[in-house]
Length: 514
Image 1 (cartoon, rainbow, N blue to C red):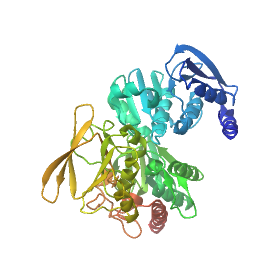
Image 2 (cartoon, helix red, strand yellow):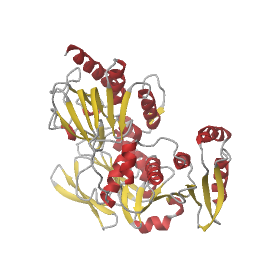
Image 3 (cartoon, rainbow, N blue to C red):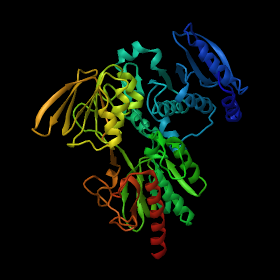
């Protein structure tokens, strides 16, 4: 049964509904069928626009569809969407009535132009923190695109199917028996992948010109949001371009070092950044990427949407992303033995031999967490010593099923065509190539700055970090940078926010002098 507080919140949320939304549950004799019915009855009790009905279809496990009176079967939930997925249920109801947060007209049209009648399944775990974003994105696409169907499948109810498909990580998006994608992915990147997989209809390019701004900020994380707020507060005409608000912060579980805020989570902080920016006159262009930048007194940006936007001053605040090994077998076995999220994918390796690549804090923490689930963990570190905090290293060394190998370079991931079977590494002390039989490899080797799109224009160091002055100026006049994409030390949210504020003030100062 849903708690009274949740039911009360849902009544407020669903007050927006204007049309009937149907929750059609399959007949099932499964032991958890009543649990599903209790949830659906609770949800439907919060609005007379939510109609609960029994389908004539039969399922061996709890299952239901959501549709409106026009589109009969666009979204299916196979399982009971509790935990992290409860929000996916709530949003799918709102979206089915064209309520909630929708992408802008440009992206909606792009979704509609994806070719083909498409039916996808996303296999998830209720403990997975990355799964809801993928489920919600595909459900949203299902509402927008008429010939698109999406089904969320809780792997708990389909172990044989999981085994047959060779799925070893979540979320995993499947078309029939073909793996389309595994792991976290943004809405924009997901659309790009669908376009590449199925094709897109050609439409006349409009090259819409969005005009000239005083400042354009590229990046919607803590540095970008802070910069845009500061320039807007100074009265500068400001636009912000981003793949998603929050950026890497959205993938952060707990945040306990934001001064004056004892605890928050990445998604909550991202929502706060979005809300705060909307208090100001900032043109937020979400779900977009900058393809090229033409320098000059007026800088011209060409976006992947076909739009053109120009500015007097440009701020780069694109942050960083998880680094990949870049070795043979890594991409081929992503989701089939290669993983990046210990919390999401760890349960799939229960009782198995796995490795963790990376001896920093993230790698050692992952190894500690996984040691309680798997049979054995072998942690590999490129340097002669682990780089994590001593308290973590001591905890790791106290675990009986953990082996630590330092001074080792991972060289190849090997599989049988379906899943990972072993990995090769080089002993850097003698250049000897060794191998280790295992079934899973968790990559935890840190971050790489998102500076590739501007490297030919501004100076970067050997790590790809943009070189900036004490006031965040680059080597190019009126181009600035802030946050994790720069060479400023200590990649912390609070530091990125401060750097964003500083770069905003610098841009204002320079425009006033000019």
